[in-house]
Length: 141
Image (cartoon, rainbow, N blue to C red; front, side, top):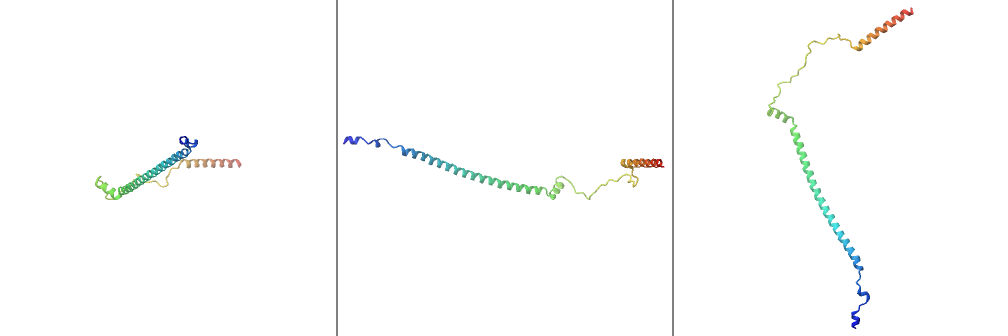
């Protein structure tokens, strides 16, 4: 009997490596999947915080824009400009509106206009043409 106890069958002597070949890659895959899901979730949370921060910046920028537009409107007010001109700059309102119109020293001469170059040219050509017509009329007789 001792002989039977000390000897094991050939199948029992070598441990099976087959379950380790399946379990180890499966565990690595599950671990990788868990890490990917954790990374994705942290990225989603981080992007959400970034979106909230940017929304706050946009709201602040819009409020600043509205404040500046109101300031520009206030500064462009004609009443304010007049007040600053009179109080700070010492300007005064004119008593009455004055307009200066230059008066020519000699009145314009109506009807005594000098002829321009075009008029001189046309009268010269008309005279020459009339002279040619007279010369032709004498030759024909």
